[in-house]
Length: 76
Length: 380
Image (cartoon, rainbow over all chains, first blue to last red; front, side, top):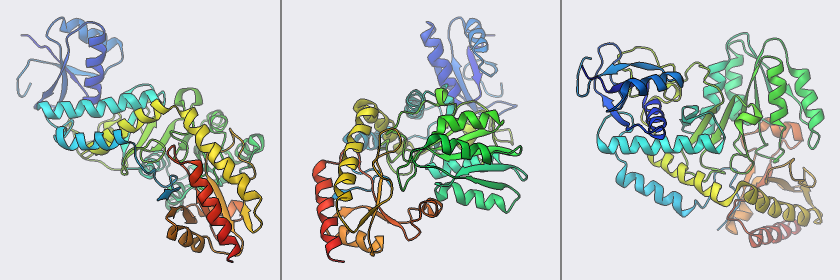
């Protein structure tokens, strides 16, 4: 299943992640994640291509990644 | 009007600040960090841009180190009440504002001890030594003004920060009178918590302030509530800045503050400092030749002062002098300036007249003020 959303702890970190990924040549966009079974609503960075690599980069850069999700899903 | 009360809040504000506030009302009406609508994300971006700008301005590690607060006082309360616990000791200078002292007096009743370090105007070595003597094993935090809001005396906060760290304590700096006037590099100076008003030397709207964090260490929260993310979790998020920002942000204020930061950067801090110091130096020199006027800080040598001057007409309460000046449409600040500790230290318990110019103040303003004070002293 395609899971192009990288869930982050806040909108600030999502925007910081977006900026970092754009600077590294990724297409990355902010998306609101409506609901999450465990943590509730939050923000994600949507990376349509090479999401795995983007996640790996964010992880290496010290971002706290809360998980991955498909687009438009509820109760992920 | 001749406005020389910029130590309280700067006036006028630059046109771009007014425009940014108006733009916020028109185009950024959705709540940032609360939904995924186009306007909410756009507003979130505007907020984020201000975080990046402020982080860059004070050389913080990243936008996550910039916490929006309603005022410098609020930021100081966040740090003081977030860090100190019963049994801890805190060291402060003898020039602190009530924004520092009142929260500390409250904590004193809960078992926090306060040690006051004497400052020595124009002698940073003696001031530092005084702080050294004040440090104790239980000292958890040093809270120190960067520059006195009454006398303009600048403290060597970089050296005090190094000293605090030697003793395993953190330092919180009150930059109410220095932000936008003195360059502040939170990395080089090793300041742990920098508390900044948005509406004074940064020329933003009232109701704005910043807490700049050097490291991402987690302190206790002053308030808890909605942060727009992880809402199922009952506890406050751990990560700054949202941890300290519950509730809806002051979007028009923050966008105005962002424009204020750009204005200051465009003008150049050194240029602003030189301009304002030249005005204060001229006034200081002019008044020092007038019998019947008391000055308290000698010559304002660059590096040891910010552009704030305290004075009195001998034998006249400062408030009465202030009323006379107000009738001439000159706005200064009289009385105790919410800093009774500083007045105690400087021997001005009855208060002073404070003159604080901005980048918009002119030599003509100073000449008119000097002339008015000259008339006033002869009327005693």
